[in-house]
Image (cartoon, rainbow, N blue to C red; front, side):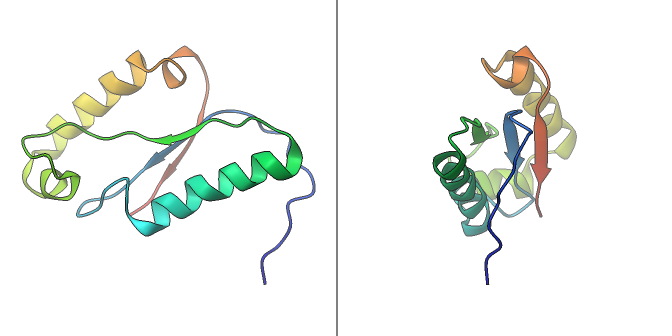
Length: 98
């Protein structure tokens, strides 16, 4: 049974971050993004949600998350967030999954 959201007062953007051996296309990430879309429709809100793709030495995010140094991934990710047109402008929520 899925609980219905009847009140939501937080309209901060949502940054979704996947774990090692995963990508933004993995099912539990897309389910969260789809849930935010459904929440927006149900409540009339306009909450922005995105999973940012960490650039790497491979086109495949999963391979990159395994072989690229975590410190390099983290540094690049922080730069991406700082330069992002939504996340780089103010506060946001983050959901990190692994």
